[in-house]
Length: 521
Figure 1 (cartoon, rainbow, N blue to C red):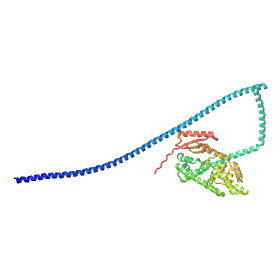
Figure 2 (cartoon, rainbow, N blue to C red):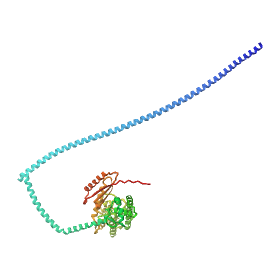
Figure 3 (tube, rainbow, N blue to C red):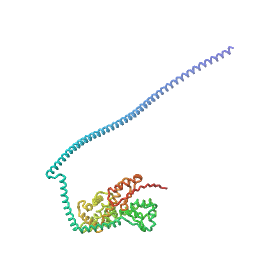
Figure 4 (tube, rainbow, N blue to C red):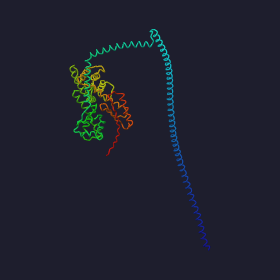
């Protein structure tokens, strides 16, 4: 039994000892792990402290930057507000100074006005006193004269009137006698005046010749197409060209009436193109008229070039050539201006050759002497001075410019070409049948009538037709209403009645048209 107990005790002791040893080894291991953990935690704490310090510094820097940013923005806002306040204060000061200056000015004006009012009152008082003195002096003189003459004022008046009547009768008898004697002596002169007046009456034929063109037709069927439905085509032609188109019973002919030859030619060529093409309607009419106007402008240039070449004149400015071409469609006292200028140029060349002067310069001056009669715009200068200005502008020589400006004695003649141009101009105009003043004044009156219409706002076109008995005015539909159109017609008629002199009556027709255009593609 003892043998069995002893091993058991020994095994129990061994287990106990093993447990104790195991416990001590675990404790030592635990102590080691604890020490390692403490070391690791201390390291982590140190690292965390470092990171915390860095993070703290970073956040502090960010906070400082944000503070600085906010501070700068705040300063900007404050600066902007201060600037606005200073601007407002400056404007206020300016307004105050302006108001103060206005107040000072008003005070000065009031003071001046009061002074003038006082002066005026003083002058009125002085005048009243003088008027009283004059009336007293006049009465005293009348009384004195009555005493000296022995007549009263009424008796003296009657006596004076009777004496003047007798004197007037004797003077009248003498005047009548002298008039009769003068009439006998000037009977021949009066007869010549009668003859001249008769010649002027014949000048109407010249006016008809220069103001009317006849457009020939192949057949009378074309007349209906030209007139159009309800007269739309003929109205469109008249509105676009400013020419009165007369369609009467004359077989195969239409009459074009207008004082401006350019307008008549545009109307004639436009009608020729329309009749040839066959398409006659308002839109086509406006297109053809616009193209024809460009064609006429080109033709004017060609006429100027041909004239210059025929006369042997070189180096003329293109604008002067164009002006020479426009002379074809202008008249002076019923005489075609281009024909007159060509005639004067040839006469000047011949006369200059006879006198030993340069005929080319003389021809040049003779051709250009009346260019001032075809201005692009109205001018108050005489045509001679206006022509001289144009010649100087476009590089003509001093001799030519002086001859142009001096041919009507507006300026001093400084060259020998000036009297030559003057004499040749008189020769060309003085030949029998060269001029008719009746036509020129008639055309001037029609142009003046159109200018009256153009002086009103909203007027686009104005045409004098029916020999000046009617004025057709086209207005802008956007600017002029129907009621305003009626008022405008009355105002134009009143201005014509007030400012112009004309025979008979003038009918003023205001046309307001609204047109809608769309394109189908």
